[in-house]
Length: 251
Image 1 (spheres, rainbow, N blue to C red):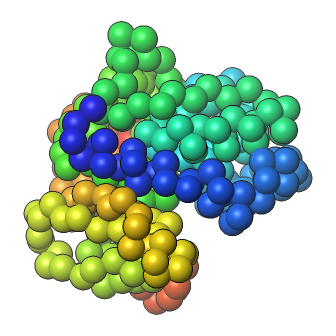
Image 2 (image 1 turned 120 degrees about the vertical axis):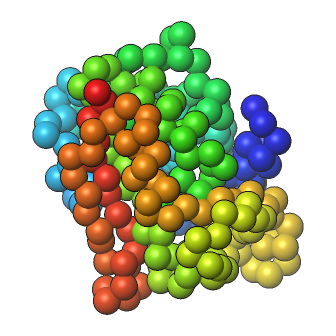
């Protein structure tokens, strides 16, 4: 695990389980919501799956299982890869309460054991803004390619690069040049929900934000054929771009 991944692990294990209980409910409460309407819990991402039953999904940086558990309820065979043990605990307890099986590997995404997992999945799925945690988007896409069987699909939903120049999602992130390649230190995603004293104590993360062309070219350079690209409005201001989804097939 590299130095910045160690930094991210500390940040994502800082009061994380308690945060999920406070914001999403106990695992039992969350499981009840997932079971009531798993498609609704997937939100727009459900439309990018042709089917669910028996599909082997690698949920990349799947966090607390907020998408993994609904996918499992719909019949997918899901393995989450994430850096946080606290996230694993919440996701695993939620899966048990929902009555589904969920694989969960706590690891650095760039260090996934490809001897074990290479070519294992039909879909590599990620959402919620994860690419900025990786300083080399090409290395990230190479791992995605290696995880998929031939013909497998990448579903990459992430923050729109427009958010580099404007805080369109109201995440309290700094604006910068759209073309900046700077690696910078910033707050982890949950810090803004705490009081100022706790917020100052949070471990920081090390970020690298990408342009749209950097992301798309990394997908194309690393053995994928792009099949679909959608832009989605910000949840804070529907007049602004907030997220995107790229769907690509492993060659």
